[in-house]
Length: 168
Image (cartoon, rainbow, N blue to C red):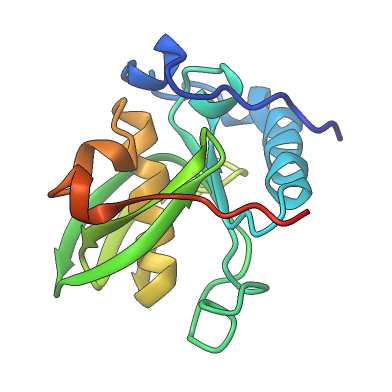
């Protein structure tokens, strides 16, 4: 496995719509690299293929080790290919950050739960119901597949965008 370089805003690939995965077997090594890249980033709970320069509809999410996701019901490590939201509900405003926008966080309005149809890394169809923080992470990563950044979802730059505090 390898840690892949993260593309950062305003890299044009982050604004592109990703293409569907045609052959899941052809991307298993790449999925392992995405997982390694996500785990290498402090606080990383998800990553989408376009963030490392690969415009394919693949996301990886794992909120189980995060303080906001570990106590809620979650699925642990998810690798979802060609994910589609079937339904969503509720509403919450959450503070989000992104490896591709490393200097900022923002308050973003998201659904409290999502029902997602996708293929797993073995090419098997799966239905995932994400709730709470896991639902937020799934929505955030799925936005990357359509060229949407969390910056595109904030209501007010003045009130909802924050410069990230750095230690040291």
